[in-house]
Length: 243
Image (cartoon, rainbow, N blue to C red; front, side, top):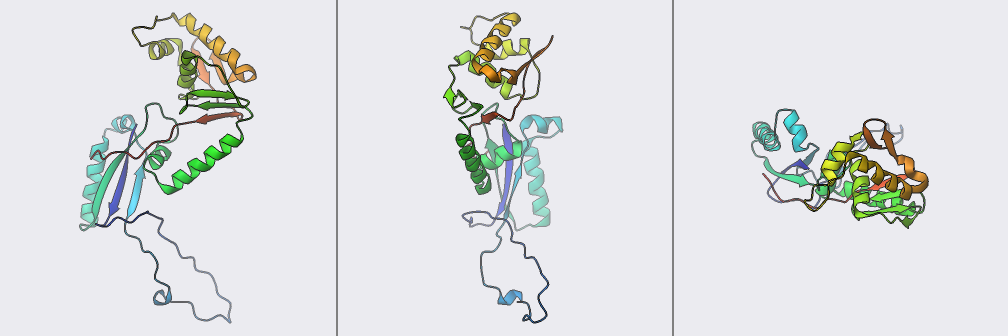
């Protein structure tokens, strides 16, 4: 998945980009002294630029009739017109194929935005505390925990569950599952009905949580998120420059 993060900055990069502070005026008591003027305020850090994180993959851009490089060029031209002295730097955020989550969240995390890192860490800590109950599908570590215990899924069973999980809420036809999961020349391509056997085995190992994989009669299968299901995705890493 590719996304754009456009950064406007001066020649010297600040160690961290932070939101521009907002000063809120409040009504002072009648006996208070006159409010401080800007000259009276202590000298602190000042804004030196901004980061604009854009959540948009190449497929969505193409559907809109544009491309990521085209968008970058358009933004740069706009900045050049509005602020000719502004310097810009564009980096694309790369994520593993099939990564879940909102595009914008993936971009912020992949580009190591401090707020996104803090939220991801807090979410992981919360999930780890709750792993003793329900189902945890850990995409990054290729494992499934059921009520805190590691489930003995085969490689193909995990692939099947992962394929459904990453397409949460969408009904997947049997033919699509066959085409996606049995691509290796060494694999014996099963018939569509063989998928039903794999799904039955998968559900048996899910135990009392088997209904997270639902059958859509005459079509295929769908993953439905429950309150007792946690999906853990792999985190991105800083991406190389692409523009």
